[in-house]
Image (tube, rainbow, N blue to C red):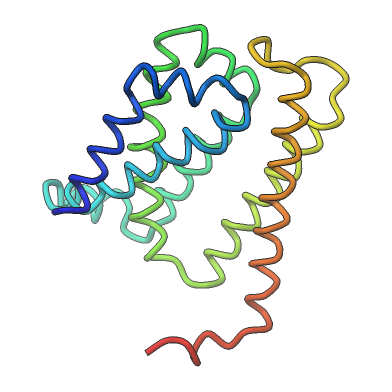
Length: 186
């Protein structure tokens, strides 16, 4: 269970007040580094949780669809500018962020991803790319300040980061159609 220990260490590290302040200082780092790292901590803790609660995942996430739906709902909530603002100003929302990203995003994603076919994975990545393109347009072209705790220039930078991530996801999905993966699998 070395992986679970690394996940717990990462989780504790990300909750340290100086680290929280550092990650939340910049809007792009807050959205594209702190939150995915929290999800990665949950993904690392997944084998331990599956070992401790083996029936839970089999009963509630048998085919992976409920876990992916939960993943998409929670990620969609945290894409909202208001959620990011409240995470900085309301302690209960900040606590929810530190609970939801590892345990409602990272763990369900890791449990569900292996249960999906290539087509299912591409559908999920397509949904994420559409969401990211939408968020890029909103953050880049909005005339008003969407997050009260961040400057407009940080908002535009976050929008461009969303755009680049969406482009990378789209390129990945498209290349799936041109590469025969059976050549690379054992």
